[in-house]
Structure formats: structure tokens, C-alpha cells
Length: 579
Ligand SMILES: Cc1cc2nc3c(=O)[nH]c(=O)nc-3n(C[C@H](O)[C@H](O)[C@H](O)COP(=O)(O)OP(=O)(O)OC[C@H]3O[C@@H](n4cnc5c(N)ncnc54)[C@H](O)[C@@H]3O)c2cc1C
Image (cartoon, rainbow, N blue to C red; front, side, top):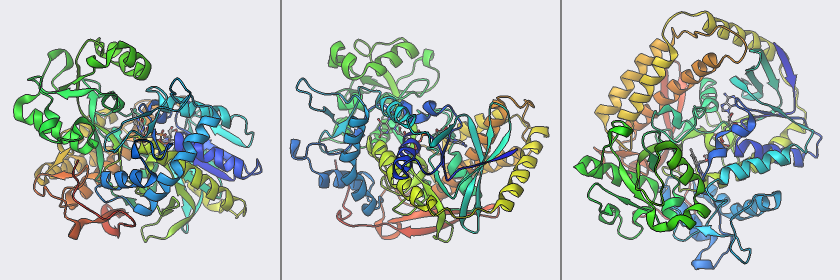
């Protein structure tokens, strides 16, 4: 066990974490030491798989676009649960971030004259998504990583999984992490911390997300009694490839692909006349579920039991697919042997993104259960709920959110760390011993196989907490998760070794996922209306009078305590959502 001292600890090296590190390094002019901690090699962070692009109004006036229209689309897309003061920050800062990444080295797609190309995305009135083929995340993350390597003040801890946040008297002191290479437990300390650990859609079995998207940072915050916000809102993306769930980017529909049912009908015209397949994801996903429930889905034994619909890209032609969607072609061919230029692609709605997360104020400052900002602690990216997406995120708005709040929190963390506040060393050492004991107990326990628990959790979430929800089914989920949590108390880590103990890592992640799944279900049961991604069959309409408020959940003993906070409305008055 050792204590590694830094000024700033950034937990997570996806787009949000790396952008925060770059900002903190620049803002402190190399004078503050920054730890960037990732449970994976930093470049394997899930952001690397972002496909379709980043939103921002690069050319006001083109197609009558404006920053205000981006704001309206985002507020409407959020089903008026997004905090509009935060949305204003998103739309105003997105263009400068896109330009910054251009200067840093991202090869945005351009036309013959060198002008950056824009593509259409769901719920956006006009094309305003900037992209690098269908590998936007890969290029952005690579570029950030390259740039970060030129800052000696940034120390990257690859493959260190955090197990605890060190918070005492509402003040951040650091984290505790296991070095995967050696199994050694380390406290990594600093007076500023940024949690940037991504979302938790891996609580589902059928998901577009990596095995690593287990919401650890959110669960660690919850364990420390901090508050979570809007956890009931989980986004289902319309086009998960059958049977793996790998994403077929919305950019495919943005480029002109459309959806067909078993009769070969372009069924979206029956649901959303104007925007059709480019309506927001919540609406397209629910339309697809309705088609399948009406018996107009397809099955194919080669792909297992899941029913699906078809995505038709054939009319786009080989040349366009090769230029704009090369990864989609590669994925389809490698995973199921189908070429989108010639074949129909089988897809169905899939768990993709989590709108809820750690409750923060507009600066990304993490809030305690009483709503007080935790001194020295911020959250950025998908794990933080500053609430720009409200109850439903529009595609391509996440990358903008990650880099903008990466920058904001990086600056604030640097300002705070420059004050060189003293840390509580006795508390740090005591916590390190406590954590060592806890992990020792996990390694010595005999009992349930963790992967049995994980499989059961995935089945439960897939079956009961989907694009449509109802009380009876949610209550079944609640009971099943509670049983799994009991089993988890006797979970057995089979591998007892120290070096790259992925069995231990998985077991820790499963514990985190169980906690978060229980919060999702509790909050979903509690919200008795349909809004954005949360569609209750018994309460099919949005109810602004009673429910235009954020759900705030915090741990209270063994229970989950739910309170509410108001939604900030600035420029865009709530209206019925029509597309
Ligand atoms: C397939 C796919 C495609 C997408 N495409 C787009 C798109 O085109 N446009 C768009 O706007 N959005 C897109 N999204 C959403 C977007 O990619 C994510 O919301 C975003 O990349 C999240 O970035 P992040 O920095 O918050 O976290 P991540 O990139 O998920 O990074 C999380 C980091 O935290 C670390 N971490 C987690 N737990 C721990 C722990 N316990 N200890 C230490 N480290 C830990 C991980 O190692 C990693 O470094 C897509 C999502 C998916 C799944």
C-alpha cells in the first residue's frame, strides 16, 4: 500500500477526463501535478467508440441554423427536463470546442473546398453534427492523448480501478485504487478531484456500451452519501445490431438510411410523419417496440431469439458508405457477414446512454445529499448530471457535453488546487487500511459466482426496465435486484491472485451495477408520468404540473431516499413535443 501525492486527481480518461486534464495542465502552466486514473489503458476508454459526431453550430445561417435553434432542439429533445441554463452553456461553447479540436489535429470530414461537412442527427432541426467519418470518438480521444503526452505534469495511471472516494467533512482528499498489474492498493491524493467515469448502460445485457461502462464513479459517489439525479432516464438507441447490440450509428439514418418492418414498410411514417427515422431516439425506439409488439418484427435463428427490424442502407451506395460509414460496413460484415451496400441490416432498440448520474450544479461541482457542493470535487461527462439532456439526449450532444464540462471542471479544479489546501493524512491512511481489509475479505469469501449474478442482473434489466415500463414489471425487477444484492454479500472471487485479477475487478463492477440498477428501478417506479426515455404504460402522458422536476436520490442506510429539485427554464417554454 502506498500514498501517491498529486494536486488534482482525475478519475477517468475518456473524452471528459482527458479534456479536463488538458485544461488543468494548461491553466496551471505545468505547476500542478495531475493524476489521470483509468481502469483501462487510457486509450481504451469508451469514448474511443463514439461514432457519429459532435454537435455545434459552426455555420450560423446555413440551413437557417442558429445557436438558439440548437438550444430549442436540445430543450425539446430533453422533453423539457433539461436545465436550460446548462443548455445555454452547451450551445454557446460547442463551436469553439469543435474549432479547438480542429487545431489540435482531429481530421473533421470536409468538402472539396475544405469546408467542414455537417450531417443530420435525430431531433436536430437541421444538419449540425461535425464528424470524422464514423470514428469521431477515436480521432478525438487519440488527439487529446497525443497532446497530453507533451505535459510532464500529467501522470497517467493506466489500469488502476478506483474502489473508493476519499471524502471527509464534505471535502475531497483523493481516491483509493487497485493497480491491476500488481494488485497493490494505492491512495492517489489531491485537493481537487474530477469524476469522469462514464455511464452505466452495461447494467443491461443488450447494450451498445463496453463491458467497462459499469458506472463505477456514480456508484462510488452514491456509497459516500452523495446525491444522484434523474437516474430513471436510460436511453434506448434505435439501431443496435442483432445479436451483439453493437451500435449502428444514427449517422446512418442521418445519411439517409431508413427502417423497414417485416412487410417491407417504412413504418416510421405511421408514427412521426415529418422527421420519420430522424425523430429523437426515445420516439423512434418506442415506435420500433410497438411495431415488434404488433407482430411486424422479424426473427432469424442465426441471430438468436431477439426480434428485430431492418435498417436499409442499400440506396446510399457503396461509395457513400465507404466514405461516411466505413466502420458500420466493417462491423456489419465482420459481426454478421452482411454488407450494408447490398443487404438489409437487422437491428432493434438497445440500451445506449444514461442521462442520469452524479448530481452537480451548473459548474459540475458535485452536490451532497443536502444539496451542498462538495469542496474540491467535480463530475464531468456521462457520469455527471448537470442536466443538459434532461429525460432524453439528442445524438451528438454528448461529445459536446463531455468536452465543455471537461474544460469547465479542469479550470475550476486547477484554481482550487492552486490554493494548496492541506489534506487529512490520518483519514487517508485509515481509509487505505479499511479498504485493504474489505478487499481481503472479498478475496477470501466463498459463495456465489459473480458472473451468475451479472447474468441475472442483465436479464432483469433487459426484461423489466426497457423502453416501456410498468409498475408490475418494475416491481419484479426491484425484487430480483434485491435478491441479487443479498447473494452479492456472499460473492466469491474465484481468482485469488494479485496480478491482473480481472475476476476481482469484475466483481467490484458487479457490486456497483447492482447499486445503480436498484436506484434506476426505484426512481422509475416513483416517476408516474411518461417523459423522454421514461415511458410508463399506465401513465402515458407527460405531466408538467406534478413531474416537471428532477429526481434526486441518495443512500439512506439500506434504503434509497428520493427528493426533488426544480428544473431551470430560461428561454424555451415547455410545449407539447411534436416532430
Ligand atoms: C457505441 C457508442 C457510440 C457513441 N457515439 C456518440 C457520438 O457519435 N456522439 C455523441 O455525442 N455521443 C456518442 N456516444 C456517447 C458518448 O460516446 C459517451 O457519452 C461519452 O464518450 C462518454 O465519455 P466519458 O468521458 O464521460 O466516459 P468514457 O469515455 O466512458 O470513459 C470513462 C473512463 O472512466 C474510467 N473508469 C471507469 N470506472 C473506473 C474506475 N472504477 N476506476 C478507474 N477508472 C475508471 C474508464 O477507464 C474510462 O477511462 C456514443 C456511445 C456509444 C456507446
